[in-house]
Length: 192
Image 1 (cartoon, one colour):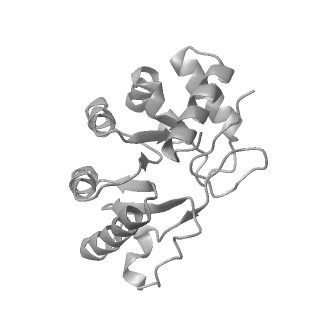
Image 2 (cartoon, one colour):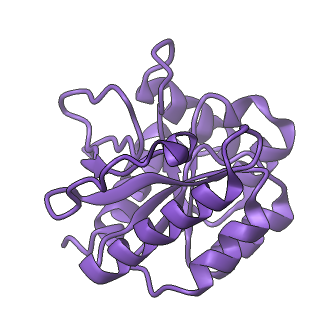
Image 3 (tube, helix red, strand yellow):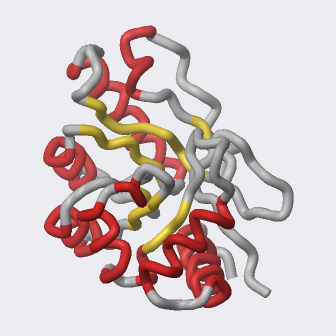
C-alpha cells in the first residue's frame, strides 16, 4: 500500500511522508531575519514572491535569490509560494540549476501549468486549489508524474480528503493516486 505524501504542510501527521523544510516566507522579507539552517532540511521553502502583499518587491526578490542560490549549492529542491508574481518567479528559476521545484498551492491557468510542467517542475494542490474551477481542469488533465497534494496551513481538511478530491477529478482510485504521488516524491528526492 502506497504512503500518502503531504508535500507542504504546517501540521505534519504520523504515517504521512512530509519533507522537512527551512526557509523564510516572502511575507517576512523586510524583517532581515537570519538565513535558516538549510543543511539539515529536505527541501528549501516555502520561498518565493507574493506581490499581493505590501512587502517590498525588492526585499522579496533579494531573499528569493538567496534561497535559490542555497538550493542550487546544496542540491536541494524548493517549494514555492507564488502570488501575482508568476513571470518574475519563472525568470528567477531560469538563473539556477535546481534539483526540483514544487509550485505549492497552485491556483492558475492551464497555460501557466503547461509552462511549469514543460520546465520539469511540479504542481501541488490543496484545499484552496480545489475551489478554483480552472485549477480543477489543470488537475484533471495534467501529467500525473508532476502532481503533488498538500494541506498547507489548512486544519479542516486532511491529506486523505485532498487525495479523494484529486482522485475523483482524475477519475482514478485513491490508491492509484497515492502510488503515483509516492513515486513523484521518491523522484523529487532521488530516493529509490
